[in-house]
Image (tube, rainbow, N blue to C red; front, side):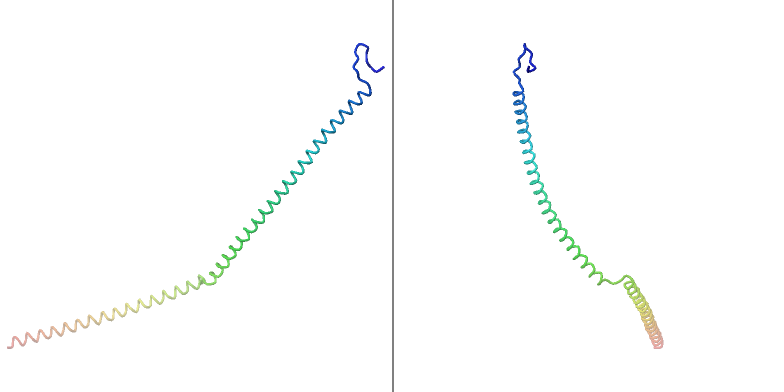
Length: 149
C-alpha cells in the first residue's frame, strides 16, 4: 500500500516524492549559488571602492602634509626674522638708562640757558641804566649851560 486511500488517489509515490525533493533542493541550491555569487560580487565591488577611497585618502593626507610643511616653514622663517629683530632691539633697562641720562643733560642745558639769559638780561639792564644816567647827566649839563648863557 502506498498510503493512499481508495477514494483519493494523489499520484505521489516514493520516486515522485524523491524527484520533487531533488528538484526543490536543486532549485534552492541554484538560488543560493546566485545569492552567494551576488554577495561575492558585492564584496569585490566594496573592496574596489574601499581601495579607491584609501588611495584618495592617502593623496589627501600627502597634500595636507605638504601644506603643513609649507606652513611650518613660513612659521620658522617668521620666528627667525623675529629673533633677528629681537637681537637688534635695545633692552628696556639700557633704554631707560639712556633716556634718564639724556633728560639730565637737557635739564643741565636748560639751567645754563636760564643763567645766561639772566646774566645777559642783567647786563642789558645795566647798559640801559648807564646810558640813561649818561643821558641824564648830559641833559643836566645842557640845562646848566643853557641857564648860564
